[in-house]
Image (cartoon, rainbow, N blue to C red; front, side, top):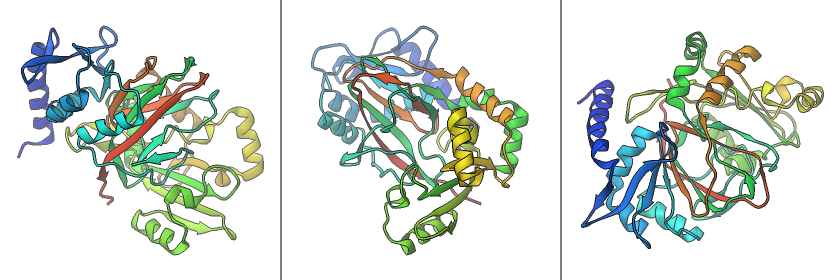
Length: 354
């Protein structure tokens, strides 16, 4: 069996050679060159863009016949954008997911409001349009997360509304070594409070209505909890800040440390929340794994690493974006007008906690 490093090296060598063949021309599928591979901008390798060479190319058939190729390209680039295939309905999104053989997941331990539309298809986060959502890896704080996440643009907004993305392999390398070492040693802790009038109720977040069932889930997921009154709940979970991709062996920055840190709140809201709830009573907050506060200066370093690797592009109607959730983080820019982007997540992977 190859070691992770040997595997990564062999994949890179094989696909570097393959890309020399495919970049100047279309990828062969059956007897015709149905699609071409390219990029949005020179010198930018995320996302890889797949476009049809002919009108009315059957994307679903092409995908089902090229699952292995797409998997290899996804491992290299982290994200693939399918553009120009005349996808106009939610059913097209569902057909794509079936063609790609993706076992879909529910939004477990959800933290933001979204609507399930059936067949494990969701609206993207229903968050005020004038606010941005920082890039993050979906559900990286749970013990079982999706290896893949998909976004389908039914209607782009009139202004803004991009889904920025960033390669967390590169972000890992940009985080200062002393910061990485500290979190590699201590991990990070997520603290959540339910029932304070903000955020999702625990029944929605954990898909349960019974306390006994909820507490059983907590014990299995290594989440400590305390009930604070009739329906108020506080939880803590300690997770590694750095993960190793199970297929490539690469280290990735895989956490919500900066995303939910108290410093991520706007100054006025931060002041109001701290006066109302105290730091331990906030709907979300993050700490070092031993419970010590994380310095704002450390969070600033982490945010700078994300900012330097963030890429954004305007949505086009019918675009479908496929991401390796362990390799690429995603977010949302503010927007004006009507925006409808659907999402699905799948291929569950469970981390072994030591």
